[in-house]
Image (cartoon, rainbow, N blue to C red; front, side):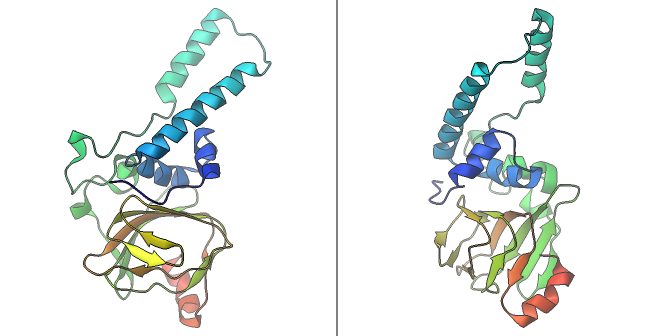
Length: 217
């Protein structure tokens, strides 16, 4: 898998700095698990961030305090997501590892909820912002919409096309409120993606706007 669409550099920088919410971090982590190029970019950002920290003045720590701090960072700090194409990850039924805490490990164990003709979703609970899995039947058009804030979507299975191009497994759409689009899923298999949003979508059609409070998108 070699993704062609990636998170914005600013999004990766925020991830490196620990400034993303858990919902957006989950999508970035899932992409990092399949994208060698972004993992390398993140390593460079982490190294630059580490150098900047060493140049800042601060209160000197005792040797004991420094050792405890390093131990805490090693224990709780975010680890680089494991590549999803590693031998232990070849099972096609497994979701990307970073999504397991929110949705479980297996595609076949997912409990989808109907929200419209050919459209189902699963919403993660207990996370800031909105994080959900979305499954859209092949050959379907989603309503034309813009975004009330930011949206980060990664394709897990299937594909879709919109004004921004063709999005296949591993690709990420990093969108803001300046983007208006209407994804159309490719024929063949359902399109499954994971999406994080920090504000409701803004639909153009009156029917989609009427149904929006019911589906909470």
